[in-house]
Amino acid sequence: MKYFISHEAHSIKEAVKLKELLLEINNEHKIFLTSEWDSLQSGNLWMSDIINSLIEMDEVLILITRKDAFKNLWINFEIGAAIGRKLKPKIFVFGGVSLSDMEYPMKGIHVISTGDTNRWVLEFKRLGYEIKNIEPFSKLFCQSNNA
Image (cartoon, rainbow, N blue to C red):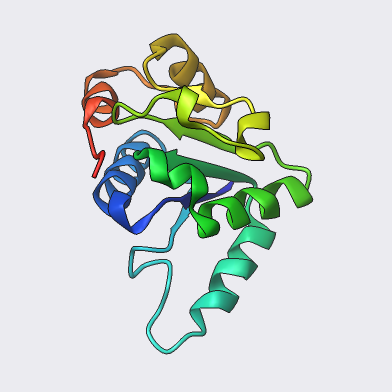
């Protein structure tokens, strides 16, 4: 399985931490993260790497850690790429962000509020990550990054 984690530049730490937590549970999955050197190699055309990864991905996970992220062009582009491939993007909203700040078109997609532990544990299980210790995930999702 191949996963693409979409995030803003403001959320690099959260995206890297989520990748680390997921790989601790299941390191057989490949996770593409644009802010990490493993995913984008020096000298490559980064736009091509991102598009190729979106084409190859089995799932796209989106991290929303600030209300401004709902309007981020890259995040919306990556969501659109997933939907265009008939994938259902998994949009994780956390860091104190209110769902009432969502606008269309993203508002038309059912998102995962990480305040609902049962929901995100179930979503990760569906993705192949059986979370036995929710504490590190809860800690990540409770971080506030509302700059």
